[in-house]
Image (cartoon, rainbow, N blue to C red; front, side, top):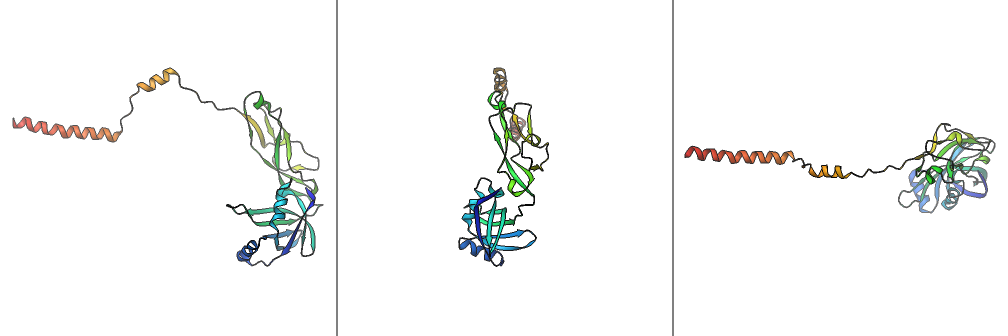
Length: 233
């Protein structure tokens, strides 16, 4: 989805490996790469706050925004990004030039709306199996999400990709038989009956083999001296 309010400024940088990228981060910049549109890839440096604003927008990484780099104005989209695992800071970003008249393959989230009858009336649990699906459309038609009404979902009924409503300008690429959501039963623990409890109490615990063996050796060791005493008498 194109967003006219989001614009990002980038500057070219020298592709000198990890050390150069590390220096960019130390300066508070975000290293990245811009490619696509049959042009040579360009290594760039960006303000991480601008990229964070794009990622946190309604359409997230599917947002098409204006990118200015070295005098070039282009439409771009985030195609890959990396976070630092502990502090959560952005480490690297990959951007792609976007032609607004060419279709794209993107993944969008599936958002379930309403309260399922199988949960409200039957006491089941809603299980969302598929949270993203792949679609094909023009950049301007990319939705922020595909919504699905689950109010009629009950036991024995399955919501599949083929049941999802979408605009005619969007084509689903995910298999139409893919399960999106269904209702599952609550697994109940069966309490033991009084008869079962009584039977368990009367059962003698099995003696460990090592203890039985020790007792046997002790008895045999005690039996031998008794035999010797009888012979002396």
